[in-house]
Amino acid sequence: MNLRNKYDIPSNAVITVAGTVGVGKSTMTKALADALGFRTSFEKVDTNPYLDRFYADFERWSFHLQIYFLAERFKEQKKIFEYGGGFIQDRSIYEDTGIFARMHYEKGTMAPVDYETYTNLFDAMVMTPYFPHPNLLIYLEGSLDDIINRIQERGRPMEQQTPISYWEEMHGRYENWINNFNACPVLRLNINEYDIMNDGGSIEPIIAKISSFIRQTELLKS
Image: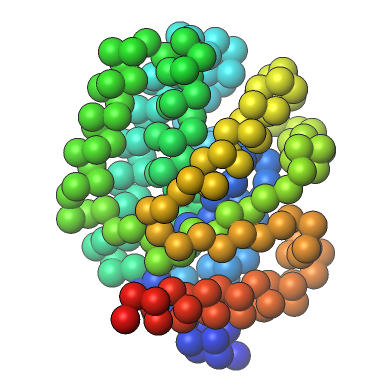
């Protein structure tokens, strides 16, 4: 049975999966899309021309990387708009501006003029009709130790060479960001409470939570 029909998930829903590096966003995105019959919108990592350079020199490449991500995410937002929804997104555009760009600006690895240019572009994009806000943001959370273990298990060279202090700061910034996020409803899921890699059936309880959460938020709107 299609779990979207079983749990009455709107066919035009847009659900975004958010969380720090290594938390399992891509795995969750694919599992939800498969179970609901939705399309996916994945972050482009393997074809990103700036990522390796960025990890080697934050100050030199942070602005380039964030502009690249902003452009790619806006293309995805436009595609979602044109299809009329029915998407699971791997990472939100809000994380780029609220966490990554802000962090590099505050740490001095992005120049003030570059940060102003970046935020002006973001503000202009969210005002266009091609920018559908998600019906729900699923925030994947876990302890710092769990996240670092996952990053090490994934084994991407550019991440292995990054100081632990970077992941510590990122983890803290994500927690602060989600505690103040209000652009759309948020459902928190702890990564230790499911195992969709080894137990395919564990996705259904998550979808049941999504259905209940969407219904509750719709009732609050009415």
